[in-house]
Image 1 (cartoon, rainbow, N blue to C red):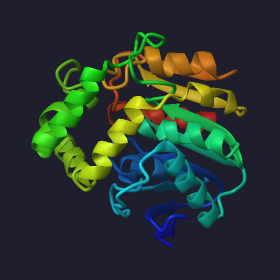
Image 2 (cartoon, rainbow, N blue to C red):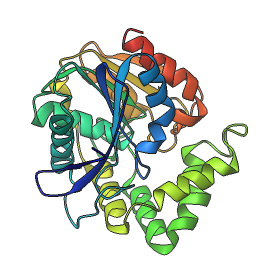
Image 3 (tube, rainbow, N blue to C red):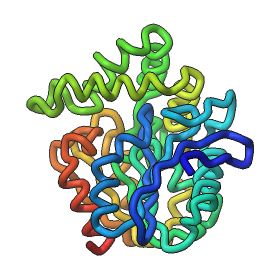
Length: 275
C-alpha cells in the first residue's frame, strides 16, 4: 500500500518498514520522507514499525493546488494513521516543518493514539519575529527565501539554502557536495506552489496555543548553531511551553542534524523509545 488517499482526495506516498510499535516520522521542508531512511532502518531493525510519508506537494505525493495550511496537513497525518492502522501506541517524530504537523495534530485531533512525541530542529512554537516573539526570524528573511525560490529555485536551494541548512561555511566540512546535490534533487521534486505555500505556512503559523495539547512524554532535539530555525524561539521555547519536555541541545549542530549528527540522532530516538 504505497499510497493513501486523504479526505480531500490527495494521494500521499507512504513508506512502511518493519513491525512492532509504530513510529511515524514527518519530514522537513523542502525534502521528502527519504530524509528519514537511516533512522527508519535503525527503528525497523530495533523492532519498531517505521512509517514515513511524503507531505502533499512533495516527493511522490500528489500536488493539489490547495491544502498547505497546518489544519489540512494535520488532517493528512490523521488519514495516514487511520489508513495504515497505526492508531494506537504511536510515537510522532517531526523534523523542522514536520514538528508543526505534530503540534497541530495534538490539538486538532486531541493527540489520538499518540503515546510520545519528538520535535527535531522543529519550527514549533513560532518562527516569525514579532513584538511578543523577539527572537524569531524577520519577515524580510522569509520574503528573501520566497524570492530566491521564484528567481532560480535550483540555484537557491543548492548554493544558498542547503549550505545554511547543513552548516556549510560555519562548520568544518559538515557534508559532501554530493549531499547538497541530493538534497537539491529531492527538493526539486516538490511543486513550486506547494514549496512556496508551505514556506508561508511554517514561517507564519503560531503554534504557541497548541503546546498545551502535548500531554505525552516529549523529546525536543535542536542544534545550538541552527541558522535556519534558531533554537531560542523554537527548541528552547517549546521546551519551556510543554510540561515535562526533555530538551537535548546538540552543541554546534546546524539545522540538518539528521545528516551531520545522524548517528547521535538515531541513538537518542532509540533511547527515548526505550531501546
